[in-house]
Amino acid sequence: MRTRLMVAALAAATLLLGACSSGTADGGGGDASMTDGAMDFPAGSTMAKLSDAGTITVGTKFDQPLFGLVGPDGVPEGFDVEIAKLIAGHLGISPDKIVWKETVSANREDFIERGEVDIVVATYTINDDRKQRISFAGPYYEAGQSLLTLKDNTDINGPDDLAGKSVCTVSGSTPEANLLANYPDTKVVPFGTYSECLEPLRNGQVDAVSTDNVILAGFAAENDDLEVRGEPFTAEPYGIGLAREDTDFRMWINDTLETMFADGSWTKAWEDTAGTVLPTPEPPTVDRYDLNS
Picture 1 (cartoon, rainbow, N blue to C red):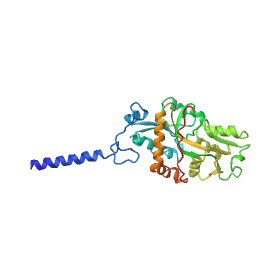
Picture 2: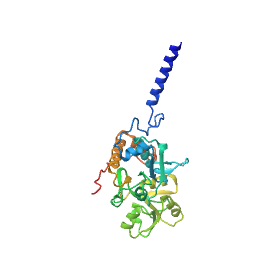
Picture 3: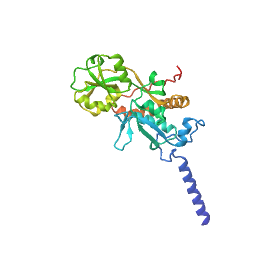
């Protein structure tokens, strides 16, 4: 009897050990955003430090439907959020270990330079001015600047109709810079966030809101009185912002993005978020630019 009991106990222990070893890195039951197995990163690299810490701080926007919007539970959701979760997963970090920090267009570079965030995934257009302060992995999506108006506004159908009009955008954003440089007859009205532009649009303080088409599509999808007008009139490649000199981390994120493009996780992230309103695009080509170029 003692022998049979010992054999049964050993068998149970073996089954339990096997079950534990087949789970995900957080001990959960198959979270798709987690990478199975031990992490193997160069000693001293940002990847190793984040993986060992088991947490990552991500800057994203909290007020943009489809890309970064705080849900009822206080946690942001959207395409940018899912991209950040996938990157964290490849570091062995589960979604519940991500620290989300609200960023707006005016403070993204500051947060990165001060080390307040590890990465920024926040409808962040890659451009040469920003590359002087921070670095970009990606792009992971390409948007284009467009216009949002009230549905009953028949005066504005594209950028050629902006002369003499007041247009709301965000201070420090690429759309603001484009309007100021290329549409001098337009009165640009800057706010801190794009959601702050909606009430001035409704009460007649401004005639239109201008930013990337995908951001405007999110607002239009949630507000029956608003409509996106015309075709995009710029190219806005979205990148992941990080510390300027951290080339190894940038290249690792680029590798991770290309893996996501190939394995279908990028497409699933899109279709679960922005793809509920917008068609599924082809993934962009990653730009492994020379930091000093």
